[in-house]
Length: 173
Image (tube, rainbow, N blue to C red; front, side):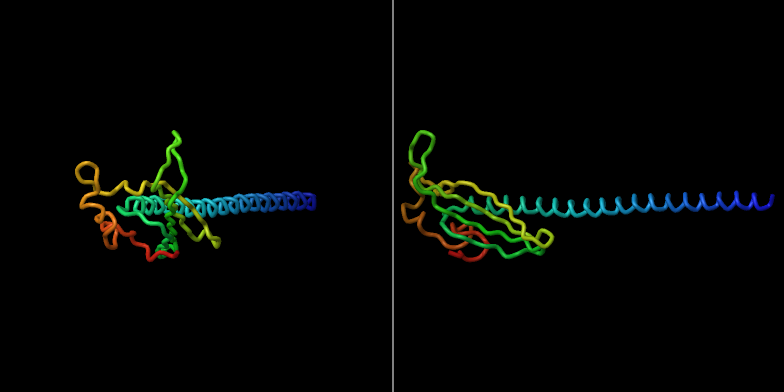
């Protein structure tokens, strides 16, 4: 009679141990899945923050170059910032373009800003562009003539206020 009681207790304790091991295995798998999900969420947050930073940087650079008083063709690169993000700006004179009524559009420029960044070991790239009429931000005198005569629009020094290209280094033509 004693042997029957010992066998029943042995089987019960073995089943309890098996249940505990299975429960620990299931809990471990769930915890591992949660940790992987958190890692993916963190990486996605970093990429989203970097993309937002790139969009703001592209918008800022595009606005800066499109509002230059005396726009010129060229290609400029910015220095990388603390996160390794840098931009390349290209200004190209467009030729032989017409409006919807078939009239030629002279002195139109395409400004394209391309931003580059490190995307977890691969180079990421985003771009933005706009069109700009060359005389858009030139001061005019009475009657629509450029202020100071024809020589005033052609003169000017460096810097955005003086009509030259904004920060970002020398052209890389």
